Image (tube, rainbow, N blue to C red):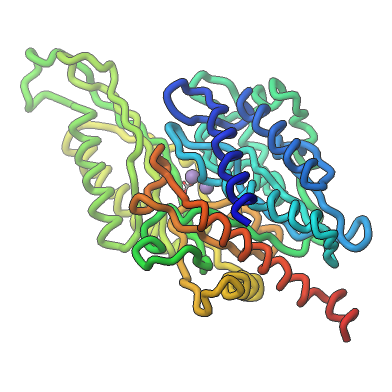
Length: 418
Ligand code: GLV
Ligand code: MN
Ligand code: MN
């Protein structure tokens, strides 16, 4: 058993070595590193007994047929892309556990009353183009044409990146499933928070995922001489942005939402120059979309006040918006059964504040998720992200038991045993 878990962890390490950054892990959508990890995952999928292909949006996929060829599929997935200076397990662990699960089925000669498809999504984080979940949205059939003009930091558009990766933008629709070809989606993911570790538990079942919005904000004032311009004549964009950043934190906390300004850059960036322009990001999440949107309205009101007092103008570009989603009670019950089969009769239930591919797949089919404990206080989006081999082993057992629970309740299986 732990040989399988050890192999999963070794593969996490092998993927972490494929990075565009010499000092840490960074792998973004449609990059050379993306192509390399797709090839590695594809090889592992083949060894596990799957037929494999890269889909029209650059996601790596593998298929393990059921009791007869061509049956609708249960999808198991997560992502291979990362944030800057990432850990080794966010997304990656879920993909590798899907492959390990199929390897188990193949080794025991087990065929289920449905096919299994393992999906290694190419973009969940949105690191390169700002908009997140691009891989899983292609699969869900919710790709938007306006995304083609999104550009990365070097000005390369999504359309250009598709072509450079060897994909045909006109065919992105081919990545989408027909709903009738899918019976559901299960994702295993590290918790990215402290609750399992605090409770001394390995696994939890996910109840829902926070809705998220992301913005790129530009605050424009007037640059000028740091010595020559008196305070009463200044239009300092960084001083104004600082007021807004503090309001972001205060308003989100008051509303029980979560908000983060993760990137901020002042221009022209001279020590003796008043900042005339500030660009900053905003990531805003909440369990309830309406409360999250009220926080955004509050932030805009503060920004308007700051702008008026300081003579600054704010431009807003919303780059990502995903509604909160609730797991299917049926599939969530199977995940619960899967965890219970490993000895925890009353599994912990967690609401996910992190975003996941399941949010996008929710528009295609019903979904549920299994969370695995993160060590080090639950740290994630950080090189210190960690999981234990024992937790990986028990997660694989639970994931497999959940899939068998889906099979046992599947109409074909139910008919066969009736
Ligand atoms: C993805 O990890 C997100 O929650 O931003
Ligand atoms: Mn992440
Ligand atoms: Mn993730």
